[in-house]
Image (tube, rainbow, N blue to C red; front, side, top):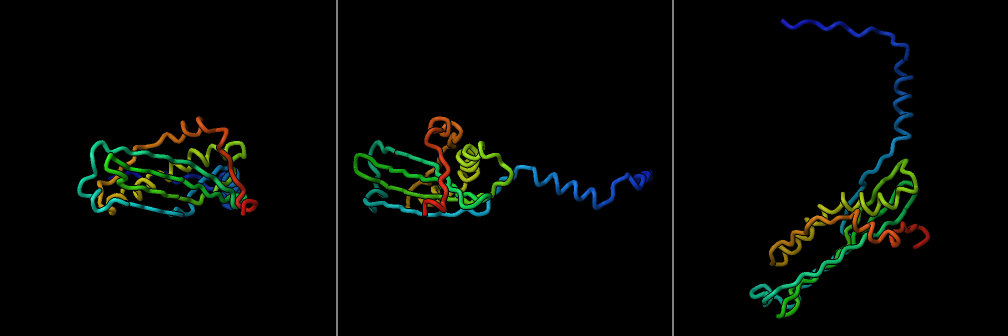
Length: 176
């Protein structure tokens, strides 16, 4: 038979309202960062030599990749991060396919110090977004008739360190 546990003593000196108020106060100082939406902002897929490139892609295919991160502030707590992705697959026979994709997300950031926002938006946000963008690229190449292009993980922290002087947050209100 299980033993009954003794009930906790009532009246610990704090009312339920005080405890709830303390919890609410702690939440207002806690840093929060979350995704409000993710979406394809712009997309182009070209296979100019199809159907020949589907049947015989040619010898020694090469793949060029380029990715950039842009961040925009929409309001005090709302930011947009865009991953600008371009790839070109070509061989001696010509262009196999081109992809241009802007994959975007809207983030809400609360209580994050201003001096950390550039790093958060150029490193943490793309890390969250990348698996979804990767799936779009894989599905797009597969639906284009090719083997799915499975992108390797990207070191957004290293990319940020390499381009820290170019990493800025554009104010969307002033750029409109």
